[in-house]
Image (cartoon, rainbow, N blue to C red; front, top):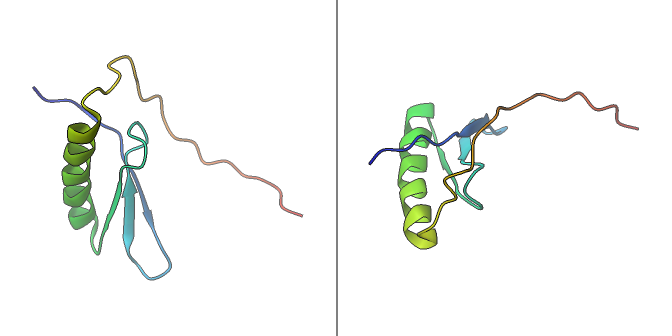
Length: 72
């Protein structure tokens, strides 16, 4: 069985790509390229699923927004 999982990819100031799966608590990884980060999050998702054994099937990814916030 295959399932789709949303991932968020960011790049830190050193150029490392940080990737996270927001529907699985604490499921994060990184890579020095986007491809490496994506491959690493695939492995992390598999490990998180092995640990949790029960991912809510009703969870549905809606989207990501970029918010502008005024800072003091």
